[in-house]
Amino acid sequence: MKLRSIAAAALAVLLSATACVDNYASIELFGLCGPPADAEACEPPPGECDLYVADRPWMATNVNVPGTPTDGYLVLGMQFNNQLPNNADETTGRVNTNDFIIDRYLLDFSAAGFILPSLEYPTVAPPVPASGSTVAWVPIIPIETANLLDSAMTANSWALVTTTVRVEGHLLDGSTIETGPFEIPVDVFDIAYAGATCPTAGDVVLAYCPRPGQTGTFACGPP
Image (tube, rainbow, N blue to C red; front, side, top):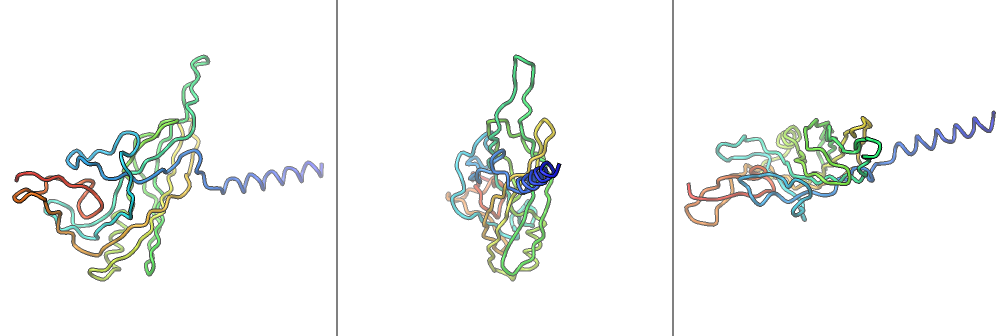
């Protein structure tokens, strides 16, 4: 009995320690996508990124573009890989239960000289299929955090803000998964972004993607 009790206690400690380990293996936050080239359609690719952000993304705290809300924030596409296998079995009639549903983004922020509270950000995103990938829009610096930065920063100043993204969701069998962290450093400028400049004289900006005042693309054409 004593040996059995010791073994059970040791197993409980092991399981407890294992539960605290970040899960990078099941659902992988793979990378930030470059903004879609077609700014007017502004649709993320359905599976994997066409290209990836290779430098720090940026955002302005205010946007001075007609027809656009003045609050600045940062949203980008992120690729999620589901490394679990499709566990369907036609011989027994078992359906696949390893597709992953994103329920919320868990966001932490760090920046020298600023206190930025963590956020749980519920969302609706495309499912991440077993043995597959999905790209979804992720609020890297949501409007709530951007407004705090705008209030705390001095005019025309700059801050380096690191957002740590985790994802919480569930498989189709009901089991929950919280991913390991993915860190994203962001250049934040306390400025009023006045809009892009078209390369051809007389053209105007027709669309921004994902939005003006941040890392993105834009489309130009005749007014």
